[in-house]
Amino acid sequence: MGANAQNAISLQGVGKQFAMGQAKPSLKTLALNLVRGQWATRRFWALQDISLEVPQGQFLGVIGPNGSGKSTLLSLIAGILRPTVGQVHTQGRICTLLELGAGFHPDLTGRDSIFLNAAILGIPQRRIAAAIEAIIGFAELEQFIDEPIRAYSSGMKMRLGFAIAVNVEADILLVDEVLAVGDEQFQHKCYQKAAELHTQGRTLVLVSHDLPVIEKFCQRAVWLDRGELRADGDPGPVLREYEASVPHADELGAK
Image (tube, rainbow, N blue to C red; front, side, top):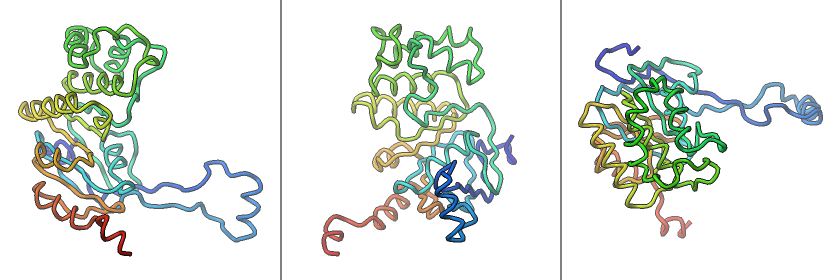
């Protein structure tokens, strides 16, 4: 539960460290490390000293270059990862759409996958049975819902995953860039649905490189850079500051 009842998400001094290199080094690697005096495993901080409060019902956008810690942040909020230091608190049921096809078994049909994902989220079968037609309709997969997932394209899996996520009555929805694989019309439909959920008081966190989408739909934006929180506030100013930091093609050519 959150430290503040008004906050859906609370991060206090959060840092996440990962080990680099092979999980199980070879005998040759161990011997070379011994010769070189490299006793410790190399590590790096994916996130450092992140403190963030997300009120209930807020639509938060997360931006930053690749490798800045955006996906790690969402995984910590979702409880998939544990922080190395600091504390993460959430309040309410969380639904995640962090990786395309995550939670889908290739041999299960789309229909079976809906029930499996709902079970993982703790949704009673009777509730998902009542919502299944809405899920299938939103995903626009009526013709393919009884086909195995292995026959689905990336876009079809994204559609099904998003349709499940927005129809299971989660309090917090976490979305990480996966909408980028859909066609433009379906992307617009997804963003409109996200805006609708926001008006219903749901909390949404969206990671995206699509800055116009962040500015249009999000109430607030945070900018992560090399694991650190660089800016936090209204989307417009945060996006302008971020864009000003990104080298343009003519600047790169001049170097």
